[in-house]
Structures are given as structure tokens and as C-alpha cells.
Image 1 (cartoon, rainbow, N blue to C red):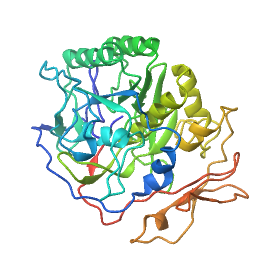
Image 2 (cartoon, rainbow, N blue to C red):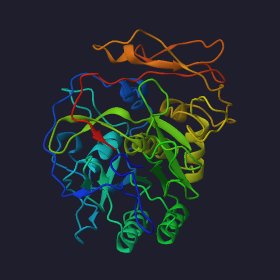
Image 3 (cartoon, one colour):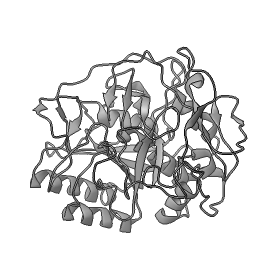
Image 4 (cartoon, rainbow, N blue to C red):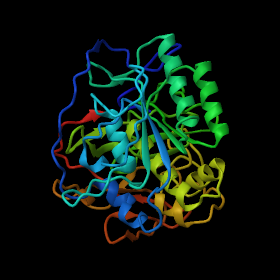
Length: 392
């Protein structure tokens, strides 16, 4: 849960224990030419032949969504602004919710390779925060009312808004009862609830709402396919996805580089939206089962506190029948596929180490997949010169 929201409080949503500063609205970013490494791995153009998320409603409970971005044209419903009691969540000062929405439903654009995995889905923005701390991280005020507002956002998304998938890139450090009950109600309605696992690092406690029953908790891996040092391990982690040096939509237009479990979670939410379209008769439980059983095994055992069941594989989720969970390979160092380079994203990708792995090039690009039961290769990378990073 949150790159821009990691931190804190009893009885309220987590926020970093740092001095807060007034939110400063982000401006437009620079248009990113080419295809980012994470999208080379997930290959959205290949997924589009199977599903686009058409007809699926994805609630983004976050800082709102800036609909001025051309890659979100026609993709964002009015939603709600619970910060101001307004019936429209289509504004975003800090850019966090816009980034999340773009990962899910950003439209293809001829001038860039940045796009969402489920561009046919409809985003429902539910605005609950816009505060930032001194490190630029998003936070929710530490109060009973903020937790109640968060619970209200979840209930509204699953009820009146009719969300099929709910993405939550915010974190709590305690299992607030109002939020727990709202999550339980959302799960009963049949919504797939996805939440970031937290950015507190190895020593942080279990994060919520990822830690609640029925929620898919998502950790973040780097371009080399290993857990990011800030990604919070624990029982709340069900699966991992790329979350480090991810290229996302900026407010207004253009793109920026971000990192955090906040931005790993929407890749899972987008895949859930694709599955909702492709398998409309499946229950939410069956959709989650497809997500988890199709994951590429990662180091740490069949299920670990670091990676959950493994690394998200959208193509396998859409094409393979759900079989038994595959045991992961033993923990080990990451062996580079190619020498580090500055000019091409694929040169910075790596593969999980295990005995006797066989590599295959995915879609003629960079995503490397190893046969089931062996190590999996992951290709994604970030331009080492990218700046303007927004922690997630």
C-alpha cells in the first residue's frame, strides 16, 4: 500500500511519522518515449488480444484522479470526493491516484509506450487524502474521523458505485474495526479487493487493510525481480509485482518515475479487471485464485512473507487453467541476464537463481519466463537517468 502513504497510526490510516507539510500540486511531467521495462515484461499489447477490462469498474481509493491527462480521456467516472463531501473525485493535487489509475486504465498513445494493462476498464475515483510529508509521501491524518472516512469510501465503492475491483494504495498499521467491517462487506458483495503491502521495510508490523481476510496484499519488486528494500514483508503479502522505478501518468500530461507498493498494487488490480472481463461467470474468489495460482514462483518457498505466492504474471492468469500452486525455488542471489547498461531497459533485467533454469524470450522482447517449478526470469528496468521520482 503505499508508496506515498506508508507509515502510521493507531486508530487511523498509516502515515509516515514525519512532519507534515501542505500539499503542493504537481505539474505536468515529461512524455516518456519508448516502452518502460515493467510493460515490456507485462506486455499489455499481448494482453489486449485476450481482454481489455471492458465493462469492468475499478474503484481507486486514493487522492483523486486528474482527468485532464489525455491518456485517461473517457476512462474516469465522477466518483466521489470525501475530503470535501463533493460528488466528483476527478481532481488530484499530489498525483498519486492519477498514477495508480494510469497503471490500471491508461490509454495507448502513439507518442509513448506508457499505457495501462486494462485500458477498457472504467476508473471510479474515491478521494480520501491529498496530504504529503517532508519526503513527498502521501498521508492520511491521524484521527478517528479519517479512519471512518476511509471505511465510508470502501463501503461506497462496493455498494452504490458498483465496483468490481477496489484498489487501495493506502496503509494502516492497526486493524481498525470500522475499516475491517467495510472490507468484509465489500468482499461479501463480490468485489476483488487489492491493497498495497506497505513501505515500512523488513521490521514493520503487518499492514492493513492488506492484512484483512479476503484482501489481496501486494509487495513490490525491483527491475531485477527481487523484493524492494522498502517493501513490507508479512502475512499480508499474497503476491508481488513491479513497483520500483515504474513509469506512470503525471497530472495534466506526461509521465514520471515512481516507486512503492502503492504502484505494485494497481498492476494486480488491472489483471483482476482483465480476468473479470474474460471470465465473467467467475466469482471474486475464483478470480483471486487465478491470480495467485498463475504467479511465477519466487525465492522463499511455496509461499513466503516476502513474495507471497510469487510474482504476478498477467498473461498466464488469462490463459492458463488454475492448477496447483507451484513450489518456489530456494532463496538465492540474483544472476544478471545481461551486463548493466544505461541505454536499454532490457539490459538491467535479471532472473531468479535456481538450478538448471531454461530461459525463453517473451514476445520477442525482454520478459523471461522459466518453465514451471524452476526459476522465473523477470525483465523490467528503469532508465538510470530518470528523475522526478515520487515515492509510493
